[in-house]
Image 1 (cartoon, rainbow, N blue to C red):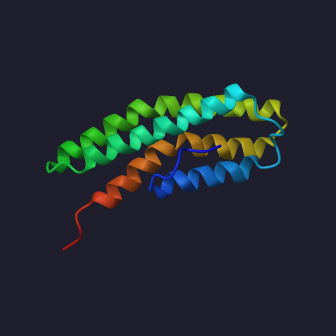
Image 2 (cartoon, rainbow, N blue to C red):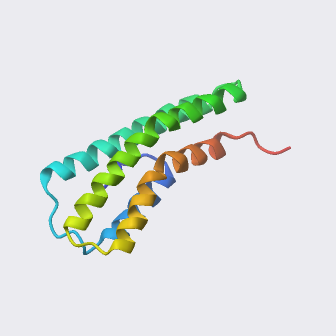
Image 3 (cartoon, helix red, strand yellow):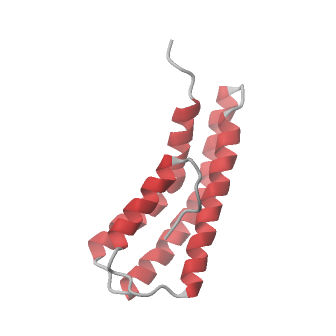
Length: 127
């Protein structure tokens, strides 16, 4: 499962690695429809990252924070929906419940993790 290609957002890479680690060896085959959905989710998270980065670079930091929260809220439901799809798919493939639960929580947290990473990256340096 990938979150898209080459974006410099460390948090997306970490999420991908954790999900792959949680599900490695448990999913024997991935139907093309599920692969396509995973790819679409990755592209959506990349679009969210770009939106958040643009919002975070505004001069008005209060507006930037408000915009970041609004962007995250828009993508939280998509992450929860995709997490539910992953859970259904992984359970059907016989994945251990603990690993599935960890992967589901990781997917749900992607919008918040990306927001935190971008906010930290664009925060003014302490004086």
